[in-house]
Length: 114
Length: 114
Image (cartoon, rainbow over all chains, first blue to last red; front, side, top):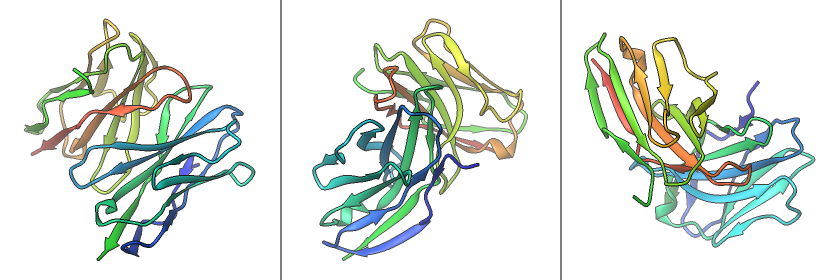
């Protein structure tokens, strides 16, 4: 079974609009962390935002926020006021305390249209 | 250096050739991960070290793949008798060893088997 599911293979969004990238996860651990990474066409993997399983507040980092719904096991990334430079692959990832390895979803390719 | 360094950046190997990919993690990072990323896909977990101990190698696709980190710092991923399906980008990441710690990635090694 997939541990991290990203159901949107590709998305097209108009510049300056907000965009939500979906991520659901599967774990029986109580302690885990959720991450979002951005991978532009250059190939580098850029860390965006982190949410801990015990965090009560949704994480925010500049234009990025994480909509964490623990009961639904979802951790959607919200990008406000999208920019052309946001065009990239976006990956959701999870790190469980019991085995410590980081597992990635298949990603969503985001295209920002001028 | 300040970041994770991987070498070589590009490697072309003839089918059947052995290759060795190097990862130099961020100084002090206990955890080190190797991933394989096919074009347009998410990173697939290969193996994980904590210091010099290889704690999980469940993602290695076959016994042709071997990884080591003998002194708990630099790691080498070795692929013996390369095959065309081994062509991919191999990503290395390092982090501190806690569930909330972000993994930082190298630029990757693009392996092409011809």
